[in-house]
Image (cartoon, rainbow, N blue to C red; front, top):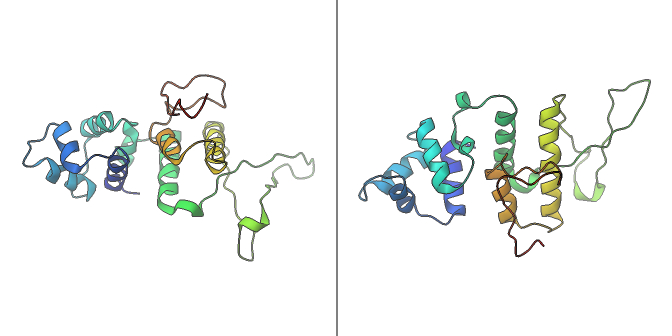
Length: 188
C-alpha cells in the first residue's frame, strides 16, 4: 500500500477531514486540504520531518509514512506485512505454526489449518522466517489477529495496535506496552 493510501486510511480512521489535518499540520487554511490531497494522491511524498508531523497529529508510528529508504530490517518487513493485510483484507490469515521434532528432516514444519475455512484444491501456504526478531514480532501479531477473530478485541483496537506498533507490543503479556491501544472499558 502506497504511503498516500496509508495517510488517508489513518486520517479517516481518526475521523479527520483533509482540511482538519492540513490545518493541524500548519498549512494555510486555503491550501490545507490541497496539500493533504497531494500526499494522499501520491503527487508528493512526505519528507521524514513531515512524516513525523503527520504521525504526531494522527497519533501513530511515523514509520507508517516513511519511504522505503527510511526503513530497514525487521521494522520494514513488519510495516509492509501490516499494510499488505490492509490491502487484501479477509484473504490473509495469520496463524502460528506448530513445531515438531524429526531427526531425519528437521527442516520440515507442519502447520494445521481448518479445511472448512479454505476452498480450493490445495492447502494454504504459510510463510516463515529464519529471523528470530521477525518471528517474535509475528507471534504477537498472530495473537492480536486471533483476538480479533475471536472478538476479544475490536477492529478499531486491532488497527490501533498496528498503526502504533511497536509501541503497542507486550511480548505476549510479559510487559506493559508503552502505548495503550486497548479500550479500557471493554477489557478489565
